[in-house]
Length: 41
Image (spheres, rainbow, N blue to C red):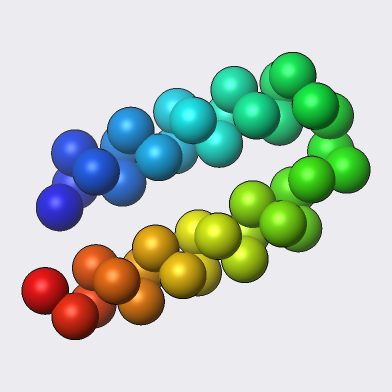
């Protein structure tokens, strides 16, 4: 569970670094969807 979050967090940081802050909101929506999936397990 925590390892999945850690990997996603690293991916999120890389995305912000590469693409800038424009896609942060989109990434937050994806993150919210990920938490919904985690809550099911």
